[in-house]
Image (tube, rainbow, N blue to C red):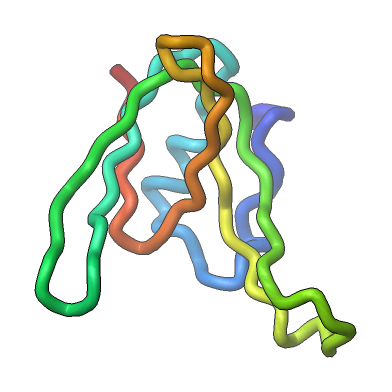
Length: 102
């Protein structure tokens, strides 16, 4: 198991088994493409993709800035990568996300 990818069951929503397997096998420096569906209200949808060099995976805890019970937190898997222009970037994965090694 890759030490740069923590155990994925910590996410609030389960990650598809094939995606979890791919993320566990990625090593820093591998070139990846992430494709997601972007939506604006219920009428406009399009696919968009971004490419870069994989840096790691961890979890983003979302929520509001007030003291709430832990059950209210949403935890999403976040993929970190470096774009070709040197920009450090991250994408939070959702059920429609595709990650490919290129």
